[in-house]
Image 1 (cartoon, rainbow, N blue to C red):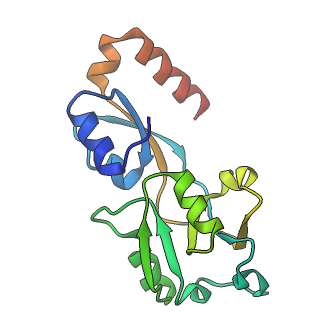
Image 2 (cartoon, one colour; image 1 turned 120 degrees about the horizontal axis):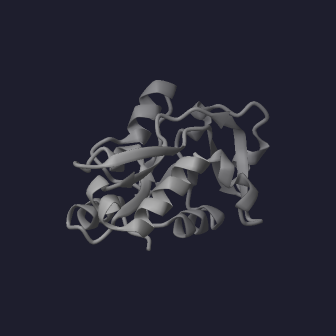
Amino acid sequence: MQYSYSSLVEQFRNGMLDVIFCINHCAEKVSYKEMIDVYTGDWVTVCSAKSPLLTIEDFKPLNLSGQVIIKLEAGTFDSLAWEANRSDFKPTYSVITNSLTSKLSLTATGVGVCRIPSFLKAYLPHDVKVIGQPYYLNRKFQCTYSETASNQNSDILLFIDNVKEVY
């Protein structure tokens, strides 16, 4: 299932979900949980294959000034504002969507640019291209689970053991 980050937290708190995968800003909103870091690597910026941004030879975050940024979260921690302040670029505004598929579709049609973890580069549709170099972004993906739920359900415990073994 795929939910918005706020829905994930609500469903998890209400006991409807035993395990969630989300970015750390989402996972930190859940109490009574255990977390496993599943991705802490670099991120990349992507744009439409027709974007003029692809013609910039020495691409820097400052080149994103005036662009629409497409993102998934609308949480209290705004990573875009944090990065814009740190890198001195001024995006026009941001569009918030609820799935990676819609994020990449909006990017492909030229609505704006977005950030994705580097490991997704291999799975990009043909009409979305990476611009610039990979960079560190203050976020990571985590597997968040309830210790209580995993103790009550052997399947969850087995799943969590497998996640721990891989990551």
